[in-house]
Length: 223
Image 1 (spheres, rainbow, N blue to C red):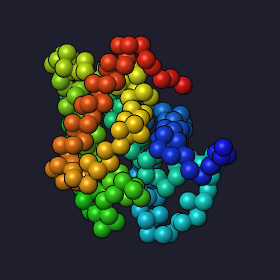
Image 2 (tube, rainbow, N blue to C red; image 1 turned 180 degrees about the horizontal axis):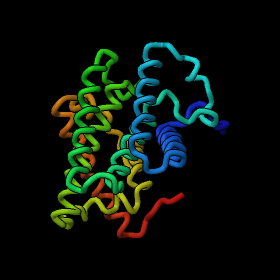
Image 3 (tube, rainbow, N blue to C red; image 1 turned 60 degrees about the vertical axis):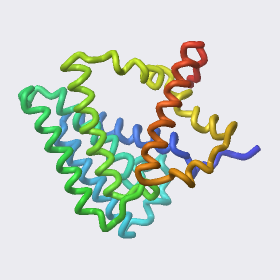
Image 4 (cartoon, one colour; image 1 turned 180 degrees about the vertical axis):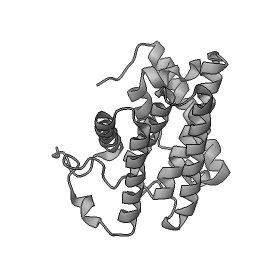
């Protein structure tokens, strides 16, 4: 038995703190997307500042007092809040909303390219990784939004339904799989590049299939 490590929140804990920080910004700024955009820019600047070692002390501040961390994952959450606020605002014409979101994503991509000297890595949550992750997520969202909500083509999404309705089980299935079967040697054969992309895609589809079967068998994990 071990005590909870109050410094290591793991991935789910880090996501939770990022969501909390996004909720705080949204609570005080509401749907004023331009003010949330300003907060987003400040978080990116904070991420750059920590990468330069200017504000190392912030890494020692407990998330209870500063849930924004070094601004990395919090900035990704705010990027989502920004495009949601744009879609919901009445101050922008409907025809211009999608253009504004595409322009925002393009700006993120350009900023990520300019900040590449700081590296591109999930581990360490570099500024470029945060910006490009946000840009890719936004473009992916627009594509899915157009197909599902505009063209009304929804049947193809049924195989992913379990990932949304039974998300915790789906999230934990890969850990359960590797704990039972191992197969870590696959990472040595196809751990990067095109082979890595193919392996990851096939594995994701496999996990979705298992999740769908378990969900139909009424096996669920919930908090």
